[in-house]
Image 1 (cartoon, rainbow, N blue to C red):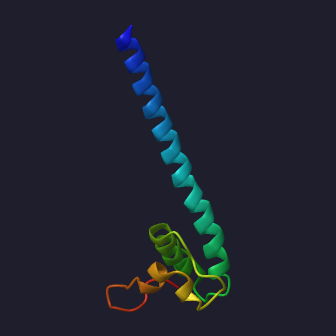
Image 2 (image 1 turned 90 degrees about the vertical axis):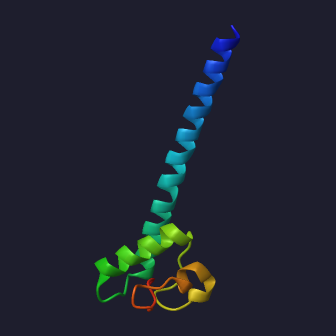
Length: 90
């Protein structure tokens, strides 16, 4: 009887953890898509802007407001550098 209860409890915990991870994975993507859409709305090369903004957003969890500047709102986003030492995030 104890084994059945323990197995049921373990199964429930695994199920809950997988649901939480799925929810968390889906949440930031929608958030990042919306925020980067605004951030890159006036970009000359929109697809590149959206790509790098999305990468930075997923890693940092934030995107500065507006279409340019305001990077102090998100220090992680501001401080990311590309391989040449320039700013990675648009």
